[in-house]
Length: 179
Image (cartoon, rainbow, N blue to C red; front, side, top):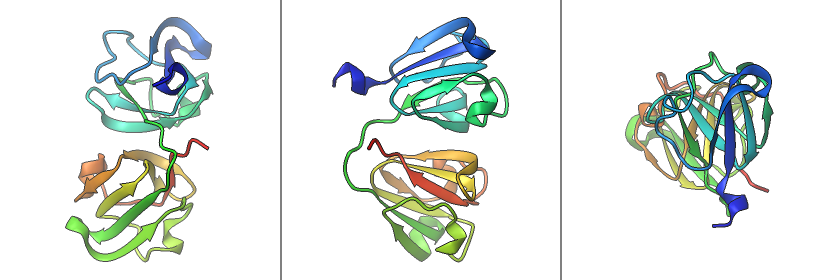
């Protein structure tokens, strides 16, 4: 793995990249020992998923390369970031299956592209299970990539709680594309 593909993110305790900082280039299940609060972030390379609680739990936030001078810029609800995960590079095809019922039951639809409004393609807003066959995806609770976010890696998600959601409502989703 080259240094450019490894990823780098810098967390700052204060807004506008001020105060105590912590630089990270690997997944970290516990960030609290490095800083008390997080009010700004610089993503120098790679997309990242941030979590409000340790061990990749709680509200999730997808951040691509760029500068985020306050937590509102990453749609944060507060200044709590307690774990982070680097999304690995994927330069192949994308494929996801979503289901209206748990354990891959009921109506199913397969997607290979982003979907800004799921209701246009799927008769329900509730997605009870999903199978990510190729690529990495972000689910959003609301249409047009808004609201709570959920990161899905390749694998089976038999119920919505498997991707960290409190309810099965999904309004949109997109691929994590490196192109």
